[in-house]
Length: 119
Image (cartoon, rainbow, N blue to C red; front, top):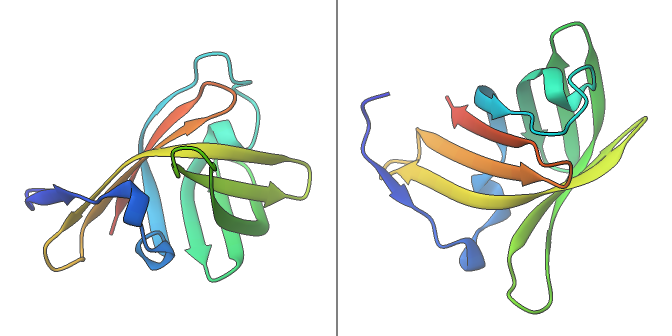
């Protein structure tokens, strides 16, 4: 991707910036179980109130929402799957001026770090 990306102020992050199809560009597992569905995700589809995960050997559906901590108003992506509920701190969101290209960084409670890209 050669598009110029701009940082989005996470305290004013509109949820619609997260919607759409995301591809996993990079992942650091740290202490996450490498066989878990989230550790093997290749694509995420964040639709209004609905989440679809494509993993190496599995597909799952669930739901997602954005929650904020009370003190600093940091945004967290809450993920509810059939077998698992977790949350990830949104550490960075970058977008092109026209909104066609985006890069999203997530830090999960398990220590896993994921970088997602659109389109």
